[in-house]
Length: 171
Length: 171
Image 1 (tube, each protein chain N blue to C red):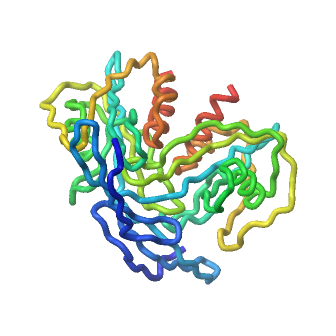
Image 2 (tube, one colour):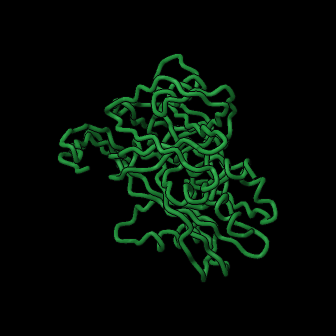
Image 3 (tube, rainbow over the protein chains, first blue to last red):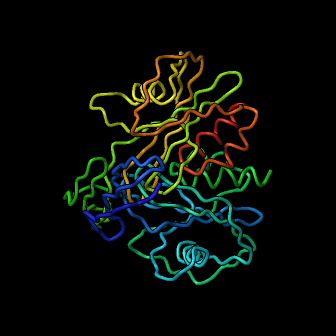
């Protein structure tokens, strides 16, 4: 498929909406409403005892949720890995010497461009912790031997995918 | 937290964008850009040999992806379970006698309201197959004994979460 035209009909702070027109290989054309998004990263940071989760009010869905530390790729020129390092320091106050990519996925590919890259970070050490007060993030160190319960409690895509794959990795 | 005002700044066919204002328990207020969404369902339909997946061009992300059959809750008054039954018939041509809810999750709770309910459907039988030609859906029966490979190939949230939990359920 090939994008043959694109019209931005709304541009907000994070999300925008475009009406894009695509041509398929057989020549037929379709129009799609697409929510633009810069992409995001999430981090599974763990030591011998804990994986470091966060609790945060998510106004869009009306709940405070338990999640992996995460953030949008909203700094121009920053690589996804540098964004992950920055978010782990800002939200949890940790740095890590070992990083690897676990999975990348689309959150809702029928509508939104957003792709999330989930990293695993280990060999941790504490750094200065400067959370954004507007985000109201509370660090929740979670026992590694109770990942099953974290998977029950988490209710967002990146945290479920990350923790399900991480549990399999640990076994 | 409590929503104290809401202003729709864009309303498209599927998605809309609102600027909502929330008051937290401590009295402080925050403004958030929220993408509205009716919610969606996805179905893990399986028999003794296969789980029934679909391949579909996803113009928003520029790829044809392997996914669970799924659809938006866009018919007024229809329950999520009835929506799941309808999508399984329309996209795959199957009906099921046994249904259970496997998981519900938010796709991207920092930005979008969308919640997905994943169902497991079994005791299948074929029904009349009336796919929407605009969706270009191809049915992909996938061997149950090769779920690991499906999890490697899938790259969207609902399919990864559904198949990871389903694999655990089968073990």
